[in-house]
Length: 253
Length: 291
Ligand SMILES: Nc1ncnc2c1ncn2[C@@H]1O[C@H](COP(=O)(O)OP(=O)(O)OP(=O)(O)O)[C@@H](O)[C@H]1O
Ligand SMILES: [Mg+2]
Image (cartoon, rainbow over all chains, first blue to last red; front, side, top):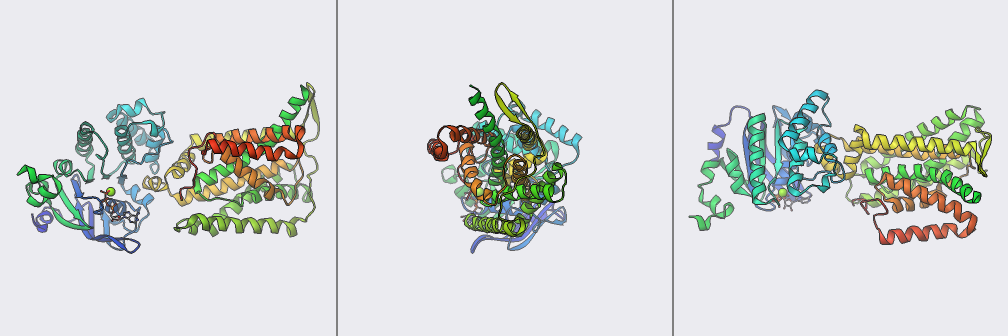
């Protein structure tokens, strides 16, 4: 369960490598010396309560938010001073919190925005077809406005839009929030499929720790902007503190 | 009956000017979220530039038209690069961008006087002739204005709704942070939009020039009307701009005939009433500039 435990299993250079990341909003410290790795093909979770800094972490990786100190590298390239619109070109793609699809644009236009930086017409066409295959409802409603979709369908659209960017890693911010238990399970299944079939690495942010620990191989527990714990999920699930704080565990001794 | 069609025809002519003006302003408002009160001055400059090129250099009208479009586009790009680009990231950007726009407006309104003089101008008629169809007197210069106006509106719709650039503009107008997450550079889109928006104002001025007089007050006269009509149609709706421009043109034309001076009062009362009951305007979706 020690920090070292998680690190010994990571190869020399992780795909996504974050070192001592520190982020402020004005004068308020949001992240303090956060270090985190995601290896190629891995699903890694960040778990934490409201306001812990999960969204901040994701937004800093994707370039929406500037860091004050620390480093972020992806595939060996420093990305912490890159604007968001260039980061995405390297294959680091965020699925934003609350879906944030373009409500007044058609489903198809939403998906095509995802492919904005790509030039390979054939590849775009193939990926569109594959998104439609994964989410047939999107094909059915491709000419409807995004805002007319249900919450679950909007989540699928947000994932589909990110897939259109041909990602190497997806940064998913609370994909399960606001969804019914059945849809949460569905989202879990989708995340696994994306990871297994396409070899896309995933950094998953969740308040739903149960879902996160079940899906991922390793997890980081974020508390007040600091990494409080990290390790293999199978160990974290049995950790008393994790049980008590994040799995509603008291009852489940 | 022929009076009716005559008024409708004249209303359409004015309406098309307003449609193009409103379309450009809708783009600027919804994409850049700058409350761009200087917009009317680009219209005036477009008209003056077209007049200048045609009457001083004796160039064909088309050259004047293109020069006006290019020059106002460059002025729009410069406004963004020199003034708004930095302001847009500030916390209190609404007030500060309005202040910037007011400054631009004053400068452009004053600069026209030494540059072109205080007298109203008119381009020697480049589209002479007229038809009488069923009692309606149609001057060729107005038909030309209508033709160019419709063509430009169609092109604008096509670009905005059907091309990659238009899609990027729509995405930025809806959510610039998410647009950036998908590879769109919002600053570039803002720059482009300011260029296109101001060029549309310049174009509106340039197609007006052969049909009506060009005067130094026209920018100030038009801005309030155009702002109000974008609110009427919906400040984020191109279609709303078309509907709003059409209504305003017709109301002005019929009003001028039936109620004379009071027509503008009635028009603004009508717009006020619509906005009172439909704050988003007839076809719009938002009521603020996201600040
Ligand atoms: N735009 C912002 N401006 C100022 N402070 C912010 C901003 N966004 C977040 N914060 C602050 O930063 C801290 C971390 O917020 P963050 O949104 O990253 O938390 P989170 O873990 O994603 O929470 P949640 O589970 O509620 O989404 C909080 O204290 C929050 O108040
Ligand atoms: Mg969050």
